Image 1 (tube, helix red, strand yellow):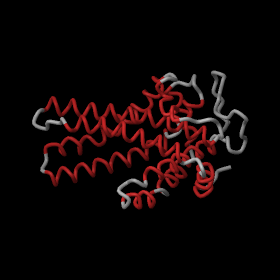
Image 2 (tube, rainbow, N blue to C red; image 1 turned 120 degrees about the vertical axis):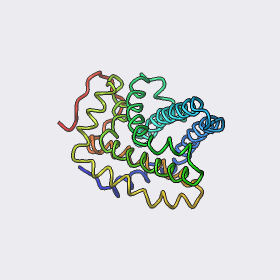
Image 3 (cartoon, helix red, strand yellow; image 1 turned 120 degrees about the horizontal axis):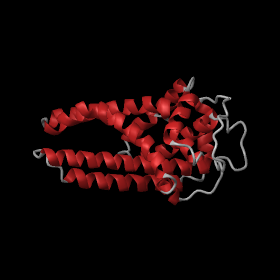
Image 4 (cartoon, one colour; image 1 turned 90 degrees about the horizontal axis):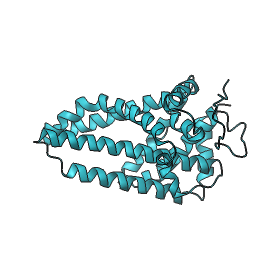
Length: 252
């Protein structure tokens, strides 16, 4: 059964009712850690020194990868929440202790594509006047966001599959994500963009509202994964705790 965006959002709201505290706290912690690290690097950015500029930018990208890995752990927390399994703040570090190379490969590939696409805007923004730099920076952010949505429409389930199947390799997870997303890309993009109005509203709260919006979004997207794999129609007692080393595509 393919549930509508409204159905998935309803499931997310029901799952989060009375359970918002930990997801909000976890996202706040991730935001603080990655923001502080990035601010430390950009604070020492010397645009007149090419080596310093390149080094700092590489560090920023590495922190982006770190943030991606923490968000994988966040998704683990949300999956446990959706499945009514125990979840803790420590879940956000899950990717670092469960064959981290798999998560690193998937998220590095996705990050690298976004970097390459936005580089034409990022590099000039460091040497342009303040006004032009701001415009270029905003365009770069917009381009990365669009690329991120497009990539997620193809590979957005890869991290979930790696979480559920500990023995699955990075490339296999990306291939399986492609299979699952076949015929579902439009559903995913529609679901993702349906949060745009709330995102705009969060801007007027000085982005504080994001602390509540992102858990809502991630919970909904996790339910999308559970729906597309058939789990919501055939729930199991220990859903997601896959013990064997094989992968059976439930769509076959």
